[in-house]
Image (tube, rainbow over the protein chains, first blue to last red):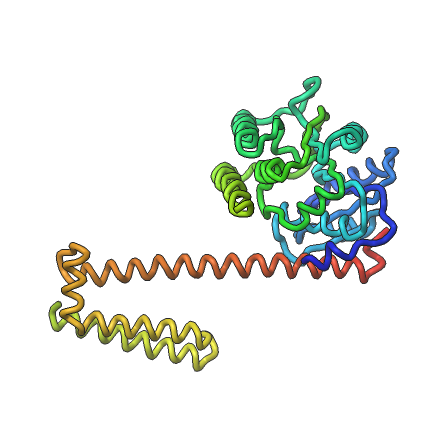
Length: 247
Length: 116
């Protein structure tokens, strides 16, 4: 895939918002209209990951760039495709946000100042700042704390909300992640990987909302059971790979 | 090993051999996999009829009977094959992912309707 990320357009663009989409027909229009109704004029890149509902058709009627996977590959693959497109199109900054409406477009300007200062990637955190009515189930919260500690031990990062998919990143981070990105449950693995590669990671307080339609990818019992084991194994493997690379 | 056991294993091996070759004839199996399975069948023949070698292995493994040794060897082989095929499946998954992403990215560059 090197060829895809190397064909960078000469005129670099300011920023793009990458939205991975899977069966979100009920949330899509609202989220796109909310972004377009705000002060953010950046391009929107929506990656439909083989949805079985009408998400793709809906996207084609909205003012967004539509990238469609012919079949479902997983959340991480959709993010990676969006990043590859953003890198090849020469965007300087990339914002990642979910299509389920939990991430608020009005919060995007809160992520960006940290990028201008001293960070390569900024995570929008649910745990910093004033409390909102957004509630995280107890077990998931325990998992987030656990992976936050793991990310700190393995990657040297001090991030509390390691599972937040609301992120803004500089071009070089997007380029790094476009090369290799976990297919499923990328959260802690990506943070550790970036930490080990000495990218500067920071988090800023952001408000999240409850999703109005559909269910989270963590809501299925089998996936929720698989998630911690996969993430722990993947986190240690990231470390092993880096040790091997250094040798 | 009793003659009865040898006869049953030999019959199973022969039937498996015919089945594998038939799959190759019907283009349902590649030559490389057919060769692999024929090698396995040859192994079954060898261990069944090379009594002395099998007894030596049984002593080496600390097994009680030659049939236990054959079972152990079969389990080891199955484990190795499962790991081998897991690697193959993973490689195919990665190739499919790369291919699907490339198709999606090429489409957006070619089709002006996909950009606002």
